[in-house]
Length: 289
Image (tube, rainbow, N blue to C red; front, side):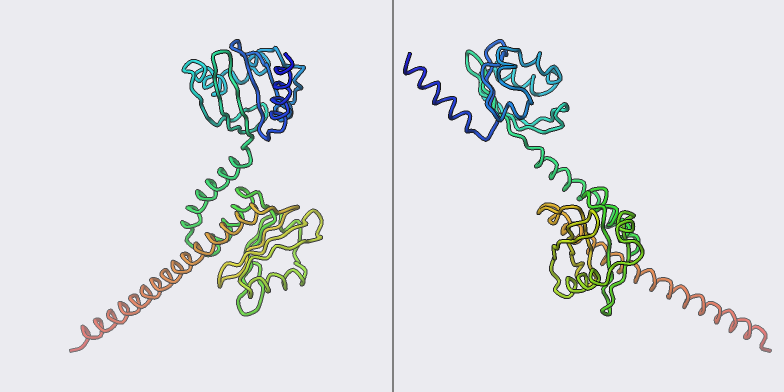
């Protein structure tokens, strides 16, 4: 008995140090063990739920893979891994199920952040198609700042033209207008010009109302795209760089389309003048005796 108690204490200590949530159920799906990480995820303490049937405690899980795959693992007595969103917690979980003849051990890992990043990248990929379909540079710029606001959740965004050493605002969101008004400080314009000249992303601290962090991402030879927020993390900057790269490519395409359209219009004007000239010549010849 002493050895069994010692082994149980060692097991509990190991399980308590785990970074994943760990839960154990008996063959009737009653909680038999819950570590601290699981308590935190479920917002319930072990004494509250030990001995309770999991599907009674969380009836919302019955119509999900939490129920189906756990039961399937128990039925076939084979481990199972899956990912599922649990609506009451608004979180995604990676679930590893290990069945035995007298119950199930379940390891939970919150993967919400990763799933959100994947969803953001997918939405950004879809938005790129819209960018590439825009026919003018102005349309590309307007779409790009909307994508930053709606897809990347970076609402204080603007695009700047930096040709001829002059920083000129091309497009911006309403949130950028609300934050800066009609006049952007000269120090900010200088920072934009410096990022353009260096052709490198610059992340800097700001003290401008609720806007405390800004990423200045060059658009190649075209200018700079600025993204500001209360706080920017590494993934925000990475997503901003992806959008800026796609925007630069779309601007290149739109410029080529602009040039092609302008060339086509010039050819049409020349053809019209030639037709007018030919008509005049033909008329003159018909009048000649």
